[in-house]
Image (cartoon, helix red, strand yellow):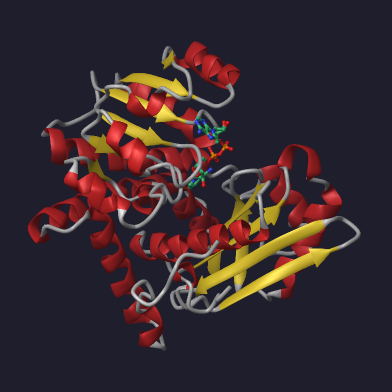
Length: 366
Ligand code: NAD
């Protein structure tokens, strides 16, 4: 398997494979770019079917963090980590500490935070071994804790901008919003949308989770296999990535897709497919930057909630700018977002050539 010229490798600065036999740790830490600052991105724990799948995932997520941080105007680079394993049964304090030591060995080039399968409490344990763990739960002046409420806030701002652009409406009251995934960000988004007066429909692979959220918020719960084809004004994917594929896009019954899951497009070409179907797609890493904006404030030692929320509102303006430019240039919103992000990375990079995409030459990993 070629790695250096595979599509998602995209000139990563480094990729570290971390192993600790005593705790069973198998982790991959990918640093895509430190051109704008130290690489910051969450640590995902997931039962990947193969090491190749884990590598492909961490590379895609890491590159997306570079683009996300660049477009959010943060002085942070992009990186990500994955721990191979089932978080509910294979996570242990020893394993998290071993991961913390692996992060620490990188000397601050990569700073970790929570993601799918890890929590703020896990960051506390990782933080016993390294000072490069953000989003800890410990109450203190310089922690933001769980970033998912901030992520949901940013998603709301992006959704409002998309609705204004496509439907010409201010606000979300009376609109039907479908949410796939009732985890941390999906649940917070549902609460915010209910407060806005939207009609919310939710689904989760775990039906009890969807029912509980519906009971709490007044949303309607449907089966997980129905959510992506129901008629709504906005579809908000808030579960795992790669869900927007040929089949799902053909079945979508919405004018707008604006959600918080990372890497929603199964392949880059799916942005064009959405565009051809007349579905407005808000690039995932634009909509879901709220959490990293909060984490960046913690990183800078400036945890001022009002200031953080103000910056998160800015996601709406960034979204509007991308959507308008996509119309003007008749290109997909994904291409415009990538272009803007790469422009910022290239402007900051001491090696401008490194910011060029490898897509034409590359091929998929896996
Ligand atoms: P989570 O693990 O708390 O929630 C994910 C939920 O999705 C779970 O309840 C799971 O059962 C459900 N799910 C998985 N596959 C599904 C499917 N096919 N249909 C319906 N439900 C399904 O994770 P989270 O923190 O809420 O993150 C969700 C997504 O948002 C991820 O892609 C993550 O990378 C992204 N994200 C999260 C944050 C954050 O602040 N937590 C920030 C940026 C991006």
